[in-house]
Image 1 (cartoon, rainbow, N blue to C red):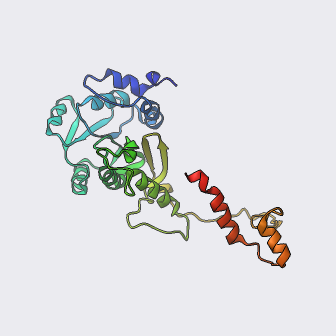
Image 2 (cartoon, rainbow, N blue to C red):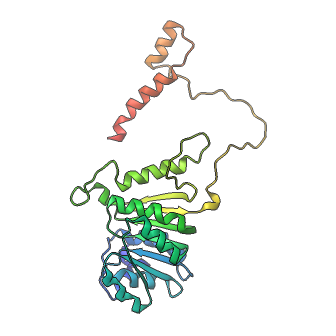
Image 3 (spheres, rainbow, N blue to C red):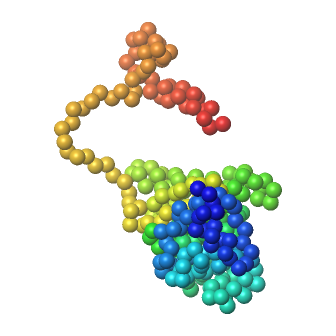
Length: 266
């Protein structure tokens, strides 16, 4: 799809103030945000900059949308005369977010287009997600900064992308018997979508339930377990036959398969 045909691009181009985006983002915006258009929602735009994105999102979502800007530069307060709510504060401060949501209440979408540092993105994600309504979104953009050395000092063990990978672990830890994190968000995040330079967290507390097995109680033919059977052409199978060993060497098979998989991780 030509990005110029997207609704978000048309809103972007019509903004009366300067706004900077990347071409590949517009299709993603349409995919993520179109369902919220012309609805009574609260949208948080982190990183007001020159104000263009405020007008872009107002045009995109429609008159019913409440658009709130978060910015470090106090000059952004001038956009309040256009009907936007502007909060001046540091997105890397959890104290700022506590005070912010105490005034604003629950929201539907948070779009982080702020400073793009690891810590800013991590604190913003942790601080905002508990205040997003079910069926809402937390969207972090420009996550390519997790790979940029200049100014952002990445790649790093503590990059936002690695934090995102931790959150993938976190939602999978809802499965019984697995680990847990101290700062878990798996009671809020139902799913995670990863795009080029954008990560979107879908919020829905109602369906973030602990998983459990279920059977349909129909006839069970008790099929033979083939998962642990050795390939007859494998070295392990030949050793098993020569030494007349009952074990299927499942752990050794795992090690060998892991070594063979290494090339896919390079």
